[in-house]
Amino acid sequence: MTAASVLAVIDRGSYLNNTDFTSRIWEALGGTLGQVAISCLVGVIVGLPLGLAVWLTAPEGLRPGRIFNRALNLVVDLGRAIPFIVLMLLLISFTRWLLGSTVGWQGGIPALAIGCIPFYARLAENAIRQVPVGKIEAAQMAGASRWQITWSVAVREALPGLVAAATVTFITLIGYSMITGTIGAGGLGDLVYNWGYTRNMPDIFVMVVVIVLALVEAVQLLGDLAVRKLDHSR
Amino acid sequence: MIELQDLRKEFQTKTGPVTALDGINLTVPDAAVHGIVGPSGAGKSTLIRCLTLLERPTAGAVKIGGENLAALPEKQLRGQRRRIGMVFQHVNLFDSRTARDNVAYPLRVSGLNRAKSRARAGELLELVGLANRGDAYPAQLSGGQQQRVGIARALASNPSVLLCDEPSSALDWATTRQVLEVIKDINQALGLTILIITHEMAVVRQVCDSVSLLSKGRIIQSGPIAEVVTDYGSQLARDLIPLAVAPVGESRAQLEVSFSSADFSIRQVLRLLADLGSDTAIEAGTLETLAGQRVGRFQLVVGVAARERVKGQLREAGLYVAESEAAK
Image 1 (tube, each protein chain N blue to C red):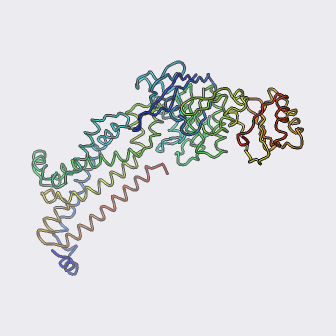
Image 2 (cartoon, chains in turn cyan, purple; image 1 turned 135 degrees about the horizontal axis):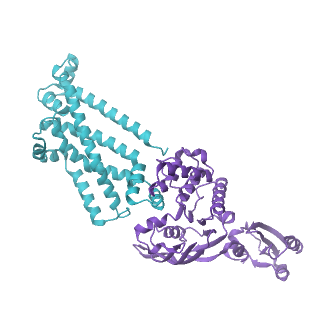
């Protein structure tokens, strides 16, 4: 596969006539979107409380705890330090036990979701840290409990940032989900690897890049739109 | 009533402990408006943070209505804090909530239902003159309007004490006057005890009944406005009745005269000053009405030869005379 061969296919104009591509693209796209959406959801649902716990236990937090905070930070950083390919391979037997096999788009979810949790946790913690201390103090003076301050002030005021962080996470996951195709976990990655690469169909490479680009743009647009809708600070 | 008893605060820093508050004793009676002034770094912010227990004092008592908050554990403190309304320098409204929901917040967290909270918030917004801006987000309000929403929010839990931390330092003077007007109205309408931290003497002049000067963690002068302004020559008297200090020539001396309508007829004093002789000129003067009396402070430039005669003449009349710092 060379650049020349890619150009050669362009000349032949086989892009939308390639039945290996047209017959699989919708399922592959659905698979990738399913993987990413479910993983991102899990990442946010688990990552947000993890990020909040880091924020709460920080030395200047609402419930400082040095040892607990260090342990949480270590977990978050370790989770992000493990290369995705290593995490995916390590999780193959876990995935088999959980789902019965790694084949099919669902097979990519455990690795993606688990990799996503510490990633989103750190982004969420950063977003929440941007909430001015004065607002937290205003809530304390209003007699709010820690629980109330966390959810009704910290998370609520940071919501635009948290949504922006989820957008970044979603887009990053699209990239990683390609890799899961190599272990048979369906999606666009599977199409690229098992058809584009193995069967030497460069047009599939090009089309997938174009589709992913469109997907990324669409997600970013939606994310930005949501942030603008939620952000009342301007 | 606010009572501070021997309040101390030390901070541990890398270079050793730093004393921010060095034994503060202060009593603000019910329904009074008390100002705390002082240069930056004097401990004003630390004092207000210790008052709200956002910062735990190292020692001493913070009594609001007789209860020592400094002795309470965090859980009970939460309930007691509702007796203190706090107005912040940077307002600290919640950007994600409308003005009405900001004001309703203290009521919502206390468990009052949404409809009742919002109704009460509407009343409070009316009190600060923003009845028609309830649905606006903070970013859509001007600085003065934001601070008035902040005041309404501070009043929501029906506190007995209102603490204001530099409430006007981010505002221009016209807006400051409006905000202070609101604070004064609230003091009169609700009988709240109010403590205002400020670095602007104009704030003290406009709303305070009494004032304390904080310097290096200690209160170095304190009292009702009427008393401190007639403590001629004291720091607060000079700060409250400012004079533009002009440079003075070699062979001239600068004298300062202070007096109050409580002791003198202003007309007679002015006549006396005007008749001191051709070698004497009035360089600058301020006449203010403070705490129901007129207080004056005048700066005279006198030829060195006439200095002692003029001083004697003024003292004989019973006026306070001091040689200005600049002339010494």
